[in-house]
Image (cartoon, rainbow, N blue to C red):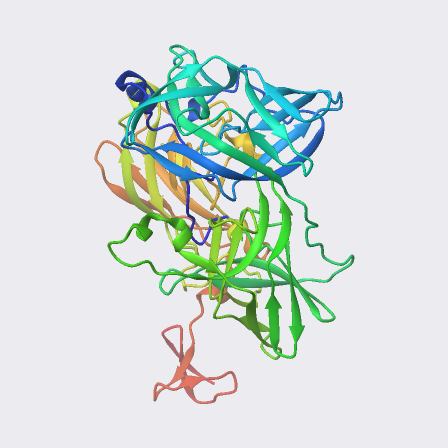
Length: 526
């Protein structure tokens, strides 16, 4: 589901290869590799068998900007997964470079005393078939000045140590010798690397709801004024405890626990559990507005600060919860970064129902890469509220794409990232689904097809046990005209179209009113 707002896209995964800091040739090469051409041939992509351990990263990271400038960043609070194999001799480190994630592992050998991990140089983490190019892992010797840096591979094994508390530390690194990603053809640095890395074990018990807890469906609205968004949350009461599930859209199965005292629900900092990519913590906090013209405008650590607790005011009669605080979803209790932020959250009971949908609005079309790479980009604006402005459950909201009046199927042969998110071939896309490669947001996507004259988009909603559909908005590639294909609405309940009744004086009429009333633009005698 869509996050309320997100920081550090470059640090928290789902990245695309846009630039490098090695040579102009490799920079140009990187720019034209399309997102869907990732191939994990030669890399360890599936989680190996063994005991999985989760860690919180700290240390320095080098990352590259779209302008090919290398900048220093922080690993603090980012997530690390390590798998210890059953043989007691092999260790697998997932995404060994913090600022660029291929969802692949490098393997190392564990010393007999369990204190040292040796990772051989040059292991493949990704493969680009378009250029028959591997990305490998190893130390890099950097040179240059300020943020205009280049690098060349150092052909030696990468060494990690494990202390008595289980903390894993990268050895042999420095500012100008990070452990990073390398192009296999010329052994130049790709532009991402870590140094002074420490991985601290996450030792905590996640929140769990009591067995047999009964929950109710609520709508949670949050965000700054004018930017508030909503999603569905399950809430259960167990004596003086209140349990909420679905607060986090990154980890919707995670529970949040609060305590109810009179009309106040108190939420403390807590560990919710693990995703495939991170540990998840709920942290009360408050936004911080940086001073204009200062460096803090670009430092995510200054945009919020943690607080001791978040409180809701609970109105038992209305069954609503209101807060003036904020809740942050982060990867560590100590992290300055967050995945999601929910400002002034408000919860109210939600009733599932069918809906009259708003038609998609065409925004843009580009066939810049059609001839060379076989895809075009198109963008439609999709409404997450119904025609009356009411909230729609995003989990029940989808959209379809039509090519020359035929509904399109999204095949994994073209959309290679789908399996990473548990999807096979799809005939309609979940409203909030994005894999950061071809599906870039609701209604914003790349389509692999030639010779298409018209592209259409339609919203679909499965609320109230019914399938509700919008009309189909179409874009004609040749004439550049936008049109609407009307869709039958017989399946929708007539109550959705009913308007309030008024008497001849313009006053709202109730069901017991007598005389002449106006309903749906018609005069009726009661």
